[in-house]
Length: 251
Image (tube, rainbow, N blue to C red):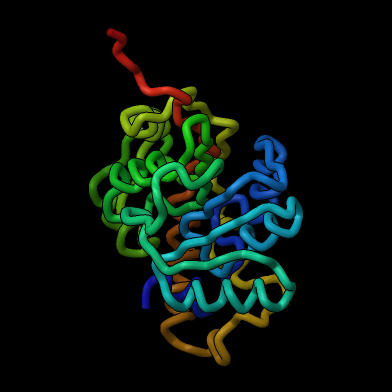
């Protein structure tokens, strides 16, 4: 059982750095109307997708690579009557036509995907010209040793943790313009998985999950790793735009 397995077992609703308060904050910076077509990548158990759909009454699709996450997201939506479509899919291969969405967002997803650049290319592809990408991600605040990166991969599941300059460069190289950070903040030890492990009412938690030795092990290792390593970590809210027109040649 790894970090993502535990998130699924506990029905985690807002395990990303900053938790749901960060979600509410970045939503204030993004114009959303009832006609805005939205895709959440790495939707997990669907807390943000459900909230956004109900708040703005707009079409929302959530995708997650894990079947259990998608099943719990559908259950969450059904419980509250949210009109969100949830699909099992990977960030690197989104099952949608080009130019399908006005806004694509994700919260602590890209550090876990196998190919960040391929995922960014997919986000660019499915956005309309003029569409917006918003990404809440961890970043390192300076050089770290290879052993640190290996521990982040082993304990936290983060395959790659870029610094801010690298995030910006990857966005730009994927075709996004006006790439900027809305804000960045240090990660705190209390941002570990144990801080906000389940949904608001606990109905998505697997029976007996907290008594399972593997769950306890992952929770403990995650908290210990965060306590030791948080000083090298921050999180950033990045936004970028797909240009309205590609460069064209006249003649």
